[in-house]
Image (cartoon, rainbow, N blue to C red; front, side):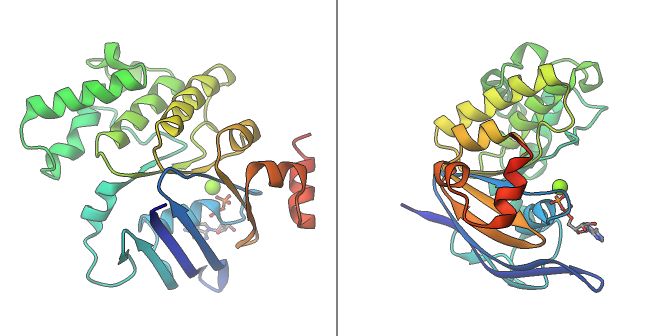
Length: 244
Ligand code: ADP
Ligand code: MG
């Protein structure tokens, strides 16, 4: 199995407050890693450090044999292979659905011809069931539709790791299922992903591994079966008891 990401001794503070203490884990190609834990435990900060939206204080993030914390790293190039999907979609409201999906590939010159970028966007939009909305303004879409477009937009960069930060937390209950379904299909196709979520059914049924975070530490890193049937740490037990 190919290791595509290895995080070692990662630390991050905001002022005097240490938010990530000493984070270590690896991700192999095809892994669906879910990151669970209470609010404030450092999940978003960890994801944001991984794709350099936040600058970690020390440690290493080795992505495809390159340490992202070394100073020679080209951030733009790195972000092209590690996409991120946010809780609040972060779509560009004044562009169409198609425009949102073609913007980054064209701007980064990953794809040079508009027609080719459009074809690629339509391919991924149909994958998430949104091709028929290609020419709609994003402001006319429901939350679930917006999130599916955000996923298609991330896929258009054709990277090999997608980060999701609570992708269904801002959605109404009817929309949650449609987004989870798309994510399940991507997982089945072998896309590597790290998913911060409170959807325990996703962690249980789709994840290859579950990491439980508490107060800036990864307290457990194990299989979903092990985590849900035999949690080792008292903090994990307490956290899971809230979902029963
Ligand atoms: P989670 O995603 O698990 O809810 P976060 O990573 O968002 O947790 O936050 C972890 C801790 O770091 C929280 O105490 C939060 O207040 C703090 N924090 C996050 N971002 C910042 C920031 N930009 N400045 C200061 N503190 C922050
Ligand atoms: Mg968060």
